[in-house]
Amino acid sequence: MERDEKTLAIKRSVELLKQGATMLSIHCPKCDSPLYKLKSGETVCPVHGRVLVVSRDEELVRISLESILSRLEEKIASRLSLYLDLVEEGNDEEVARKIRLWLDVLEGIRRVRMERRATGEGKSQ
Ligand SMILES: [Zn+2]
Image (cartoon, rainbow, N blue to C red; front, side):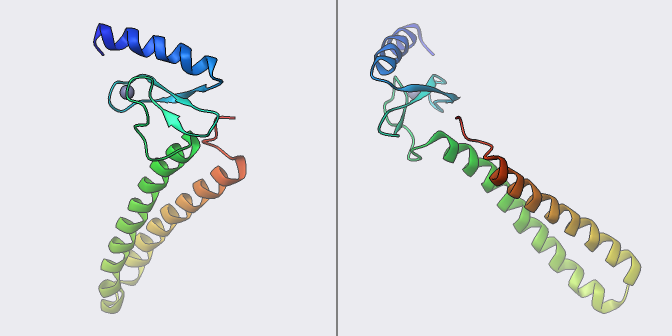
């Protein structure tokens, strides 16, 4: 961040705080300044204004982990589909072992999701 931008960020941050905004633990992807949550629920960067479509910080955190988990699930699913042919060929034990490993991973993903929901992790307050 350039010096002028930094000064501006600080000045605007103070204004935002005066307006009752709260500082979040996430940063602007453009300038790395801390983001603020307005009373209206909007998330803004002091320099760039409303940079994010996502309006709440907890949503942002949840979405990023969620997208990773979903992609992982997709990959595992396609991996598992490879074993379908092997099951038909009858390499029973080896195939069963590998399938079980991947199913364990899938179960782990589900568990992470459930725990996050139960504890409300990702929420800032
Ligand atoms: Zn910014």
